[in-house]
Length: 355
Figure (cartoon, rainbow, N blue to C red):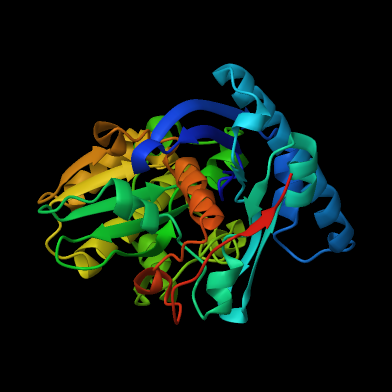
């Protein structure tokens, strides 16, 4: 898995004995500055972008293969023991309202390099059926995080935040609710040269700017009912700069961005997950102590913990989910995500590239 934060590759080795989920090994490989900047550039139309997408797609396939080798060596497993690689690829455009989504990675090359079958392109079939193509992890959350009697919400705070509503009385639902780490990462990188705001310390040292927060919260996406999904196509640095007056202290902008991320999550839970009593956080944002504390203040009626307490590591849950999605594709199982993505019917998701 390599997500909207553009920080690197999360690789996991997962077994499914007796329909259980067992995490066997993990590996993380950072992208590095050059690749991250090249990927960021591809989020906007530019000269020669078609050729660049192919070159970078090949580079990503090579890096995914390297991550696979490192992972298997760590676990003492050979490629022939692995059924498939579930590879999400790197999203550079996500425009379901226009009928497409684009993830780079060259799955055919990854299969060739790794000697393992690859399942990829998980989102396009759902979009073809009229869905958002995202988020897809609620189907996995439903399997591993649901409680028969307790109303839970799982919140994945990556570049974008998405939630999964696990009410005992209803089918699974979920949606992207707004920016998670994406804007905060971009802002601290611009002003401090840091890739992210560790523990939210910089944001915590600033003050929320009420008028700026109000301009942020006027974004129509935040008030649109689900199904909905988003990414850098909307919540970009240009989106942020377009709402600044120019005289704000950078640290106060960071504080306001953290407030925005918390409001996007808490407002969505209060509006669409009424009655929830337990919230489980995962993704990089689960490490941001300032964000977690503020969420607790916004949602005092909820018990907020991380998915670690349920046996699912916050840094690996999404990658585990795509391993599971790959398994579902190998078994030709339709995923009933109509209450999440808005697709007209259930679909078999993903394309298979044999080794």
